[in-house]
Length: 183
Image (cartoon, rainbow, N blue to C red):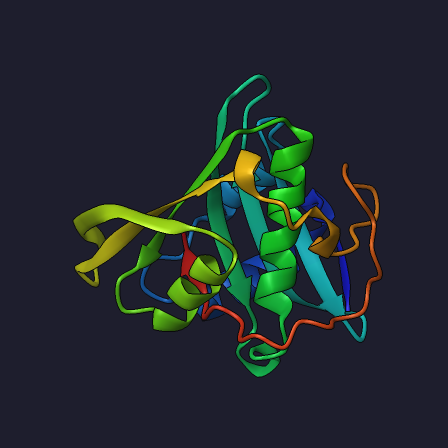
């Protein structure tokens, strides 16, 4: 497993995974291209055996005190191997490198696996947004992580070319991946 910064050249593979993961509310190619190129965030790609099997994005404009996890998606056949955790930790390392104090996200109320992952990394529930995910009419749970209080910096995944620490690139996380979720 390798986690690396995602680039516009990854767009086709990311969009294939996006459409498979979010059939009712996939982002458009135009929006995803803009996200990948934006200086206000960072996207990561996770490859396994030369194949892109996951991606994740963070929005954290320069000088901002908070950041938002935009999305995390893992291919259905690659779930349950710690890939979601690896991508989340890459996002958190990027947020720390940008000197962000808090990280926020929305997660589907019907996605208990993702909720458990976020809680295990220190996120706490702040509230609920009724009907947030459309057209499915599913509520979003709003979660927050106080990044300043996080002391698990040594557990970050390796990310080639990203700011922050660079631990080993092998997948050692035993916890479950989140099911895909636009956050």
